[in-house]
Length: 250
Image 1 (tube, rainbow, N blue to C red):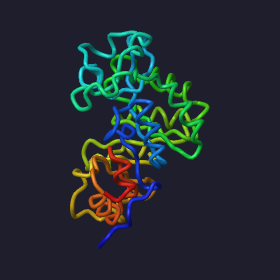
Image 2 (cartoon, rainbow, N blue to C red; image 1 turned 45 degrees about the vertical axis):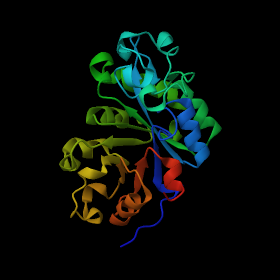
Image 3 (cartoon, one colour; image 1 turned 120 degrees about the vertical axis):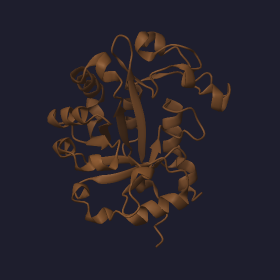
Image 4 (tube, helix red, strand yellow; image 1 turned 135 degrees about the horizontal axis):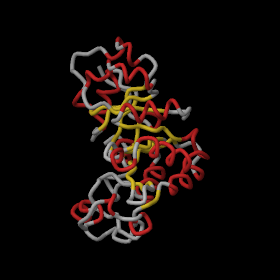
């Protein structure tokens, strides 16, 4: 069975256009949109003064090329650091800086048809507490709430977002069997993210009661052929580091 060609409506740009640009930067996010993305995904970490930045790792080494932990530095200092993935991209984008979460507001206002999946990292919970994470992120994103989906591996964060009446909530599964967990049902996620490798090969996705009110988003999808197979199986959306490649049918 052949799936439909991936199109913008069923593709998510993972950390922006990460295949060609440094991940989770304003450049990567805007380039994904310029390539045709209607859905973008980004990660949020918190500084020492408990303010959110757009960043995936707890350590600064891989993306910023320096030692240290995000949570050990004040946000104003972090915003002076590069976000250029030196091991992968060399010095090509060394001028690109770490961005505050507020940068997303401007991007979404400029692109009203774009939706952002904002992943709240589990590692921030011990540092900041769930209540502070939810409150601070929602205050910043309030004006673009209709364009943002708060997602997390942590069920309690998703539940807190739902209970605070945030309009769109999603969950990321660590294991496929977690789909049946009571906390997943309590969060009432509109989107459920899972690594495509964790989806059992013989499961009938159309028969999963847990998915009847949620869109299933499979991530780590690197090419159109895999995307087509997943969509044919009943996956709703696929998430890729190479949004441009998938839109071009590569």
